[in-house]
Image (tube, rainbow, N blue to C red; front, side, top):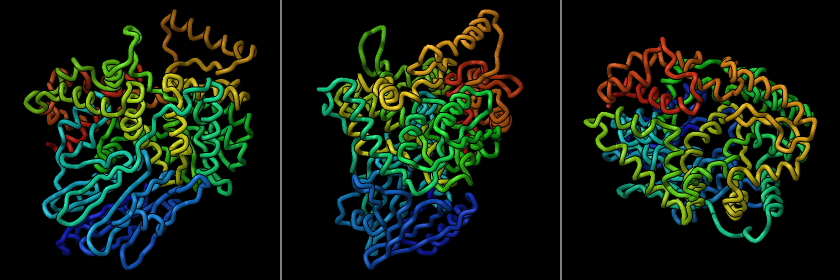
Length: 597
């Protein structure tokens, strides 16, 4: 991704030293060339990948930098740095553009403004110190300034451990804030920083008076139009093709639009993910490449946590898709976040089947399943360090959930897009940016407006998205599909032959369960996140040096039960979701060992 550090500091010598250190750090990322500018008391250092779209505009009033694709109108026209300079000017109207992008404008006479994509996927962090304000794409860049001293935010740490995410703009580092979704950040000497709202995900009743078929038509049309705007047909793209629903729907649309693509799937030939993706690629006539994952290691894990922080349960750096797509094409396209946007996959998290009602209680239970259980958290978090953090996380989550909308389904959809999708899933899009610039056609105002106008109970659980595949890409709906959570690959709309092909595998799984035979894990994401995988064993071994330091934060007995020494498996045979909280705890231990309190 583009790497930026903006420093607003009246001391020119201190600012120059900060710029030198930041430029050195940026140059070390993917062997990038660092550049910088200074206007007034504000300096900016930046670097970017070879394939990052970039434009710069200078005049007497300001210097404006634009990274990525800022799509300003329904025809797909891209904004220039000049367009963004006008929109971000001190009298500007705050830009709202589709596409993944980031814009910075530094004014000649006092102040600056910075904004990013409408869902806030590209991260922007800000911090205020005595006489100094800084903004960066990674909180680790703040260490370039001599007045910044990193310390851990116990409230954010508890939040990540309990619900796998942070809340209300907080971050794992004390005093560091992440820019809110759909906001522009403005700074001016002697005045507080301002987060100015400019976009809110729309929810309405535009499509409430039509049946499922028409909802599918309208959402499919919106996605087709968005693909035409976001994915240029004149440039080759890497298509990240999983065996699931989102990427095959995108593939079906893009192949009709004649976008040149090479499909790639990460993992091993034995993975269900790859087997299903291979069928789709062959059917569409796409060249298809399998990219094995390297196991990842402790040094990469530790380095990334110190640089990027921990907004959600951390993964292993070696699994970053940037390495998979490097050298294939200058641009990439993938379906990350699609299941949440047009599939409403997590809207139903707020629904309680036993209670036959939707509400915060059910939503929190689902979020907590991606962290440490409340009883475990209460036992783990020492009160002399965390105080009443468990109860505080519950109440703060409730507050954020209830502020997200006027109905429970609306709240669940907006809350998920503003939290889990930005912090946990969105980071995968960010990791592509060093190697190829990603397109995400579903991160689009028209697509979001259409999805938000469909009855959310109908949008939920991918009802409309599955119907779109069956109606408009039925050939793809008849191919085996990876469902992630289960090993069932039965097509969404199977014919008789499709059903019969699944019988032997189903029988084999049934016999294995009956005889308690442990079979190799063929679900990609479950396999790579297992705590007994080589990468996670490396992390556990590396983090072991901080075990004694961790006891000052966590109850010794509970901690040792959750994360016993690396010679044991720490519950690795459990479902991948059960390991999420333990991965977050490993991240916490890593940060405690590196920077302490």
